[in-house]
Image 1 (cartoon, rainbow, N blue to C red):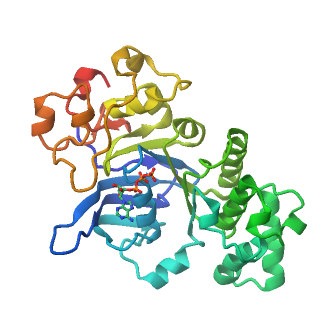
Image 2 (image 1 turned 60 degrees about the horizontal axis):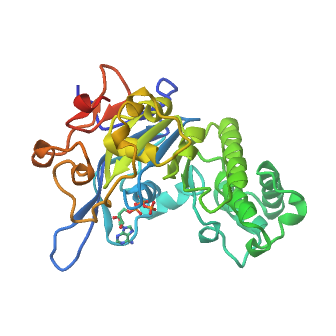
Length: 348
Ligand SMILES: Nc1ncnc2c1ncn2[C@@H]1O[C@H](COP(=O)(O)OP(=O)(O)OP(=O)(O)O)[C@@H](O)[C@H]1O
């Protein structure tokens, strides 16, 4: 029972805020050489107020997915297929002018390292206020008042004096909060959080997640969270999509994915996090609970067959000779889907 390569968080909660369907991104290699796929046939859908986590090792294509949504793919990368819709509007090939209007307004992004988003030569108040002036036409006084309000919302102490700080006058945790304040100032429908807490220590991480959840609930924001941290996924996400070498190899509701992962790669990822409890299916196959040997294949060296087969201890000859397995629901009507030829034998 093949299902379309798409996942929806919060189905029944109205039209999705973000719909990605069959997204294929390629990298141009120049000098007449063929372009190479970076993302292949990716489908993700997120409803208002819900969170989908994109997980996978470094190089799997998580950030490229985020940049494709924001219309910020680096030079040489191109959307070669599929669609991206934001609140029903097809923005796949939207002109730069339209994307600039949407960014910071209907959709915004927070980055792993706040200094990539914050400008060192402007005060944090000016930077938060700029988005409000640009997108919502607020005057200087109003924008400053809203900036202070946003700093309070992200729990910056003494917000009315901190508003005049430059980024370097703040701690890492505070800068991350400022970036969240900036990203949420215009109440975007969609927030993309790319490794939002990786640079922070564990207690600050927990505070930032609580803050994101609270602001999400207040504004009904759809969140795409990009992470390789499954503990963060357990804390934040409603649904999970696991990417491997630019392809979605498993997806589903967070509890199912963490308790009954179906793909050997997902099981390996979970096994790398000692304190995450594994469900019965994974615990019954202790031989897989090791680190995953090998590396994600580099761009241009990705097989047309199952891309995980070279690292998979369950792989057999057919896994390397048949095409990439379809993303199939584990049972009729299930939102848990796995892309593995041996899914049933190894016990999804
Ligand atoms: N500027 C670039 N030029 C060429 N290749 C790139 C560039 N940026 C990323 N890539 C390649 O594109 C692929 C997808 O990268 P991407 O950054 O999306 O991975 P990721 O899953 O976000 O990894 P990480 O967790 O390290 O951020 C990788 O093979 C990566 O090496």
